[in-house]
Length: 107
Image (cartoon, rainbow, N blue to C red):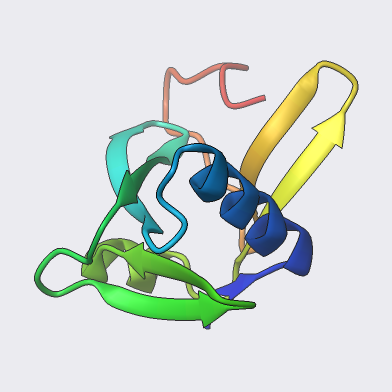
């Protein structure tokens, strides 16, 4: 199961309110893939797309593309503020394994 931290839910609700869309939600989807694994995107949306999974946390609606939801099982969506780095992160699960020729780009 994918979880959302309280901090991520509160920050997302703050952002939606600032955008004038407090009743909308966030949608996570797979944006691409590389030898380091998938990358994920996030949008502000009014309603889910057909087939999306829906999670609610502290009044926040989060929609997740069905295939992406399967890939994120056991992970959590969090929000970090560390120095100049600030934003939503997806944490947990197994780190990606680099394929041949990937080198140190997976960090």
